Image (cartoon, rainbow, N blue to C red; front, top):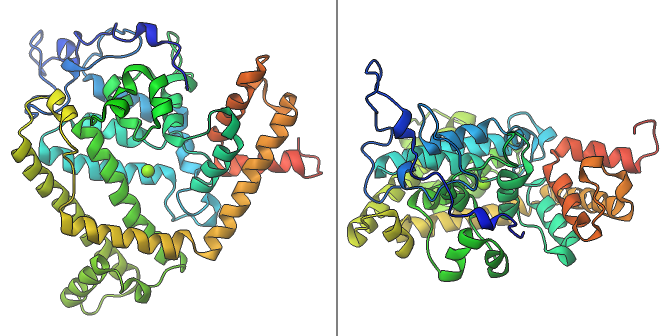
Length: 408
Ligand code: MG
């Protein structure tokens, strides 16, 4: 994804901050520091590298609060409700979707951030936005779209999340996208190939220089893993694709299973599962805070720049990292590769590839907003259209195009 607006990078409103406008309640004209009490290594609105388009400072909010609010009000955020995490949306009402997943990530990340005295608003903004670019049907959908786009620059959900907040949202008169702060965009861009990094200007630099993002971004990244490892166990058991007996081979699970049983010998079923899962999440969060605090004490960063130059700081202890990796591998083998999940994934790939092919063969089938006279950019427009679809919208669109009926 090339950045055509790199010319305005650096011209931003960093000198204006939420603090300029926010006032203590009842004390007119006395500014209140909305980010008071943060550690020196936290990201601060006042030191932000700014937005792509200069804007007046928000009233009564910090810059990162404004980012979070823009994300919650975006169309892409509401779409997450109908996008697959592991189970396709219509398979059951109680399984996680991308939306509830994102909320769980934010909740975990905020707990960690508050303990470490870093910017909770930024952590929340990154967490809520981190999956905005996901295709319908989870990873199967993304893999299929990536294959379709192989000759045209590929498809990667991280970059797509960035495209959503930088270009695709249509919310504001003055600019495309949500015009988020550099630090929020930096957090959304979790991974990036060197080739893409070179096209992303300032935002891609850290991938070329081997530097780290803010602690807030590092926290959101690990909170994502904590959230999905745990809720996928929960959903896996709920669906019947996993059993409690199978999980006995996972130390992290078994340890808490035994502790929960010892404390409440009579509980079983859903209550037992929840009792175990909440203990695992708690163990992971506390370990993450402890190990990260040790790293902070050792490296003693005095600013966000020090954090960027240091090795990764937010981490689990070695022992817990190894236990979490065992759980992750267990899920991979027993849930993500379960034949019933594979069947849905296979179907999903056929739907995505079918849609891509039909639109490529005849772009006139696309809604006009995605048609372009520039042949070279047509595949990317098709990818934007498909990536934005919810699971059920993609299924409906597939039926409209491929099933002979009166649906158009
Ligand atoms: Mg995620």
